Image 1 (tube, rainbow, N blue to C red):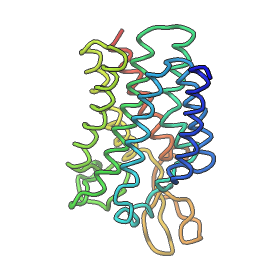
Image 2: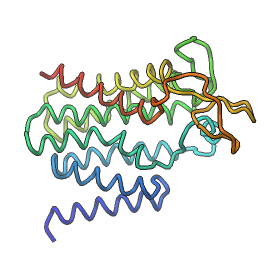
Image 3: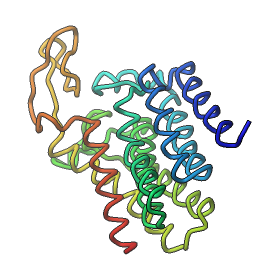
Length: 259
């Protein structure tokens, strides 16, 4: 078996394992396989390893102390099991940069690729670890405490976790792609900025709904088997769109600094 065939087999096995462990649903498993193959074609084994680091660590934190996050998940549009849209918004930009690198090999696409994953990792760690804080987060629009799981809210634990998540991807990029230390620092900084952008868009533009049955504020359009009432936000800007925009904008900014 050739190395390419072996790695494709590993990608497929990884997608199936994610589905078996309930990190992914069926559509998410298929999307993860597509993303993995795209990255393998462009950036090879090193790109695949960086993607794997993001997926494994973010999945671990998503499942960590899951019972303690059940109440928070009532506010979120989706739970910890990722579907194809969640895979696409977190890995789509990375796949695009990797494919462009395949046709036009240039370090700038590596910067975009790594920054998009650093942003996704930073945001995931902030959300999943930050939700375990003993204190309620602060909503940046009002600077008042709000319930955990509220988009646009921050906590000290979440912010530190965001820095750690971005730092991990930046360090591994430095090691895997033999990058200059300043380039790796750029990836780290803009990976974290991606999380900040996510928070800002979530606070000011993401759609939010009110359940007229139980009274909860949620991202779900249906709650308690009844349609919810929209209370703020732009219609097409849901959590998936927020994640996609924040990662893409952070990557473009990092590539601009690199140039």
